[in-house]
Image 1: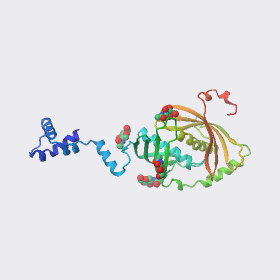
Image 2 (image 1 turned 180 degrees about the vertical axis):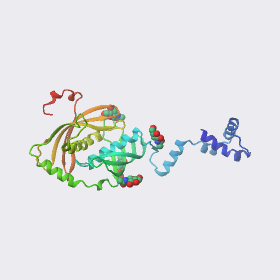
Image 3 (image 1 turned 30 degrees about the horizontal axis):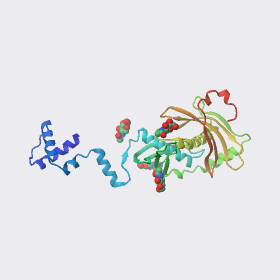
Image 4 (image 1 turned 45 degrees about the horizontal axis):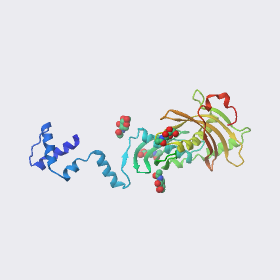
Length: 297
Ligand SMILES: *[C@@H]1O[C@H](CO)[C@@H](O)[C@H](O)[C@H]1NC(C)=O
Ligand SMILES: *[C@@H]1O[C@H](CO)[C@@H](O)[C@H](O)[C@H]1NC(C)=O
Ligand SMILES: *[C@@H]1O[C@H](CO)[C@@H](O)[C@H](O)[C@H]1NC(C)=O
Ligand SMILES: *[C@@H]1O[C@H](CO)[C@@H](O)[C@H](O)[C@H]1NC(C)=O
C-alpha cells in the first residue's frame, strides 16, 4: 500500500497540475482522494500489487499457469528436491555412487487446476562416497491430485552428474561379492554408535538406492523421507547374473516424524543397475520384539 501511495504521489503533480509535493498524512490522503476521482485505467494500473505484477510477468514467459517463486530453504522446495533426489538415485545410483541434494538454488511452483502442483527446482548434487559436489540439476516434479497415493512424476536432467564413472568400482565390487564363499549378510547399519564397517558400506549404499525407489513412490507434497537405518540385509541365491539382496529398512518421514519399516528385495549388476523387485510395508510394531522376528521374513 505504501508503495502504491508513493507512486500516486509521484504522479500527483502531473495529474493535478500542482508542482509542489507535501508528504504529510493529509496530503497523502488528498492525493489519494484526488486520484480516486480520476476514473479508469491510470488508477487501476497503479494499484497493481506485487503478486499481480508477478502474475503478469510470468504469463509473458509461460502462458500455462502463474508460477510462484519459492524460498529455496523452505519445506515446499526441499521436499520437492528430495523427491528428485530419490528419482535420480534409483535411476543412476549404484553401490559406489549415492547422490544427495547439496543445495537448492532456485524453486518455483505452479498450480495446475484439476491436475495438481508442479515444482520446478534447480539444485546441486553431492556424491556421498567422494563427498564431491558433482553437478547441477534441473527437475520438474508433478504431484497429482489423486485419491490414492501415486508416485510423483519427475523429469530430471543434470550437467555433469552422469559423466561420473564408477563402473570400475562397480565391477570390482560385483566380482568381490560374487566370489565370497558365503552369502553376505549384515545387521544394524549404522550401529548404535553410528559406525558403518567398511565392508558393509556398499550394502548400505545399495539399501539407500533401493529405499529411494520406495521413498519416491511413497512421497507426496507433505512428506520428507530419508533412509534412517538398514535393520538387516542378506544376500539371496540368484540364478542369473544379478546379485540379489533382501533388506529390512527404516524410513524416516521428517514431517510426521514417523518411522516406517519396509521389506524389499533389490537386484543389481553393473550393467543393468539397481532394481527393486519386491517391496512391502511391514506392520507397525514388527520391529519392537527383536527376538520374535528371527523367523524368515
Ligand atoms: C528464505 O527463508 C529464510 C528463513 O526463513 C530467510 O532467512 C531468507 O531471507 C528467505 N530468503 C528469501 C530470498 O526470501
Ligand atoms: C554448478 O553451477 C554453478 C553456477 O551456477 C557453477 O559455478 C558450478 O561450477 C557448477 N557445478 C558443476 C559441478 O558443474
Ligand atoms: C516430462 O517431460 C515430458 C516430455 O517433455 C512431458 O510431456 C511431461 O509433462 C514432463 N513431466 C513433468 C512432471 O514435467
Ligand atoms: C502423504 O503421505 C502421508 C504418509 O503416507 C499421509 O499420511 C498423508 O495423508 C499424505 N498426504 C497427502 C496430501 O496425500
